[in-house]
Image (cartoon, rainbow, N blue to C red; front, side):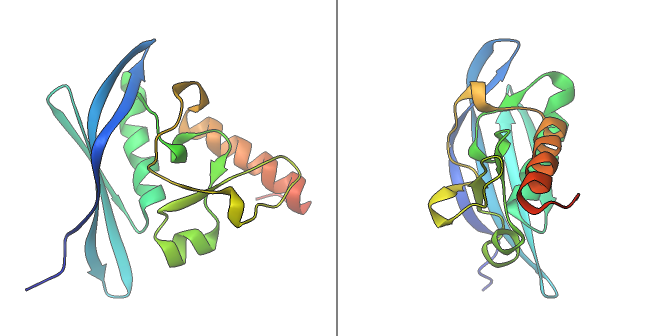
Length: 148
């Protein structure tokens, strides 16, 4: 009997569109491994629709899910969708992207800055994938003196 798929997250989260907020069911899975690479899946059940995305870590699965939701104007209120959060390579490789860092301009994060990627966040902290990636690039340059 296989240990996969393994349910990692199953709960209600806040989603919003044009100021209209509601709750939706979020589920996160570790589906197994393709050779040495893990395969994570995230699902969101919203208004009778099921949105699904898969990737090698949960943060990237969330990014892909958000890209599906954004054209419809939807945002999902989880820590991994905040402007100022982004996982390190180690968070992704060793932790499957299940945790991410809260970043501060010009500072390198510490263990105290780690939050669960799929934990609740305030809707006013949530931005688009493009905004999050642009802010991360700015943070990286300020913290390291190098461009991404």
